[in-house]
Image: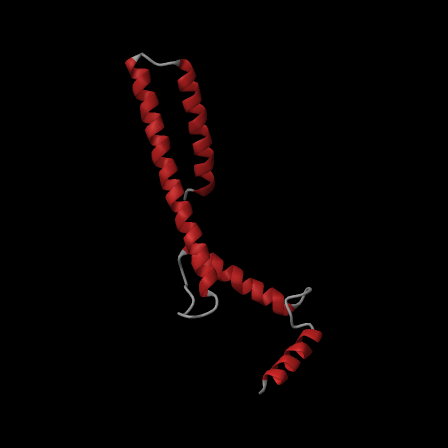
Length: 119
């Protein structure tokens, strides 16, 4: 098959609806494949075979999931340290009520974020 034959065949397929333009089964199947690869990547399961085109999407989702896991761990550590500092200052009796209120508000924000992403 020559390049011209290939281009003509591809143009015929496009005219018959096999493209990523418009609503068609080809595009839906392609997008479903990409979404599936990303879901599996986020879950760190069922990687595509080496060299397969979906590997890029699996890797992207895996990297995002790993970054989220690191952020959640950092937020948990920060929240626990803030709670420990607040408790220590309170027990020592030399605390500023504004600090305690601000710390409690910060911990509520951290708790809300952790509830969204923590497992």
